[in-house]
Amino acid sequence: MGVESRSSWPITRGWWASGQARFACLLPLAFGVLAKLKHPDGLFSEYRTVACAGIHANAGDGFYSRTLTCAGEHVPSFVYLPDIARIAGRIIAAIGEPGFLLVYLCLTILSVAALISVPLFSALVPGRWQDRLPFGALVAGGAVLVGNIAVILHGAILMAALLFETAPWLLIGAVVLAAWIKPVFLTALVIPLIMDMPWRRKIMMIGAGAVLGLLPTAVFAATGGGLARQWLDLLSYFVCDVTPGKGLLGWLQWAGINGRSPLAQGAWVVFAAALLACGLLLPRALRLTSAERIWLGLAVATLLVPRIMAEDVFLVGPGLLAVARNARRLLPASTAFEARVLRSGSGILHGLCGIALLGGLTGLGDVAVPLALLGFSLYLLFAGQVAARQWAAAVLPQLVPAKLTEAAE
Image (cartoon, rainbow, N blue to C red; front, side):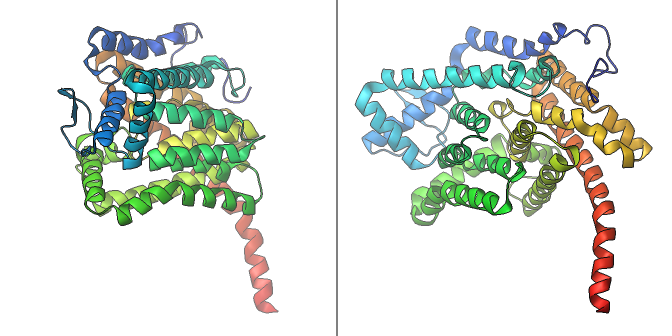
């Protein structure tokens, strides 16, 4: 059973111990959906952004504005590459705006269904569904009803990741397509990095995905002239000033550090390197299965995003639980304090989900969810440093005598 058993919520027996009671963790999602339906001003607002930009593109008008409007209605600003607006415009011209809405709506519904049902309930996912269910507390109702294109992209990457063992290049294709819309989806390339395969193959897959995924953005930034500067200014304004999100940029904002600063950029480089090191060391140290490696990759990919938004948190849970469930393999060489933390891994993760739940029920989700994500990151980094120290203790003594022997010869 490992560290996940009847004591997986060690501090909160009784009410929390019931798998059925953990359905309460879906209340923030349910209440958010009801609130959005009751006040539908922002309902599917992100779809309206894409459609509005497409209509402006068809008319030859500009669409990079803080006050984007269509038919006299203000919609959220469009911050994607111009080709996305042009493609949306061509689809609208071909099948009409109602037809485009129907296609977009169907893709969103299918994606939301997959993103909620698979990580929380599917028997194909490692671990008990009762232990995965608390991570539903992270998901807000707005994430499923604003129509953000990221939901569709996350759904596509989830499906491709589940098929990775039989069709690995399908994931690379899904990441490339997602990166053409949102380059931040390149973080999903951590999945092949974590998988147990030859390094030459890993490098080929990651290199191809990174080059092809970044190509449209790099070409536009280099050749787009004034339009590219408008896009970059607008994107920077929303990412760094308006909504830095629930990830690293949001945490740094609590400390008064703006995402534009070199300090923030350096912090992300260090943070990303540490998470990637965890992704490389933990699967081997914990002897994770291929399925567990895939889910750990999805979790690390989520936490690597510097600006985590509400629609980015669907897939973070199972991979973290895989680490907690197998953390017992680090116990023999751990200190007393490390052992206590490792044995309590599931309880720590579920406690953080409890913080997100309380935040969602009290209107403090904008603080509670970032705190939970910060806690998840710290837990992963803690387990990673234990694995790194044990790896170094095992490997370095073998390398040093070999180096001394070579020097003596």
